[in-house]
Length: 391
Image (cartoon, rainbow, N blue to C red; front, side, top):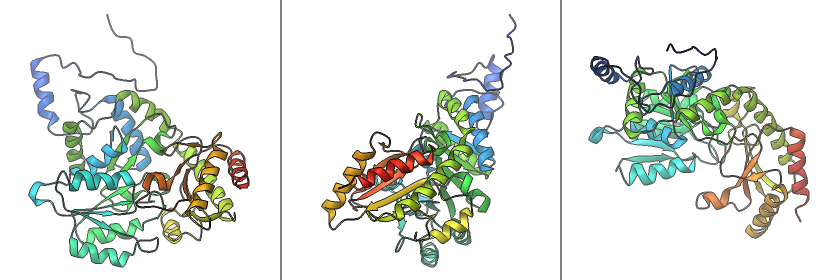
């Protein structure tokens, strides 16, 4: 019986673990060609290698990033592992340099896995007074000559904006690759690959998905050799996104620009409101002129927005007062703003910073807000009322 063609505009969910290869010659040729590690193979073999539903979702991200390839993985951390591990070359591996104001999970991975388990030479570069000194960075990279430099465009949770353009220029000068975690900025605000970055990673769980109902990561780039290395690593380690999650992600990507634009608008307006409240000690938001890296944000993002994350700290005469105010605020907003340890959801969510990153960020009154795309009047009303109710 001849298979009927279905008049659907969407790529179906291919749940095949393995694909039919018909005869011995076909399977022999397919496996020989598989060693080329092409982004989209002529014949699919096994879904751990490549899957047509996943490839289709990757192509949607390629449009957003304006890049030549994108590879989806099952989480942001697996994307990071893929991005850095392809530069591990046995005894010939040069040092790896990480900016320190980045996602805590990345720092823990660098310490627990890269240092302790793999024995790699991992180094850190610290900000001074809330911003990175580019002159100091060049001195470090000149001395260290690292294999790569790993940075975030907007850091988590203090929202420090790195001058990615200058960092890339200096790294290239000293023959180092650049890996940029662009999760907080997204390609809507800034595209590091356009400025010469070698790899961009995202936790696609966050703004690309944007609905808090799947986990995914993505590695993006333009260099063909890096792509083939990343495909090979993902294939053998097993960092492949499921076809079901890839299908759902592809549908969610269609609304990414609309969602994120509204989230940035809400965040800008709410940051101004918080900055003018006497119970708030400090607001960390790169769109505010008071933020230490406001000039870097203007340089990179222009008038497109400043992201959808706000971190703020309650005022108070001592730590106990700050913790009490933090706790009251969380209780006061709990019916509308949930405490959920992630970000990028449709509705605003929060996370207290000290209980999560206490050793590094011991400020007892600090809260990180992930701003949603709900009506601003509803969001601001909830936050304003919650602050007013604090004793």
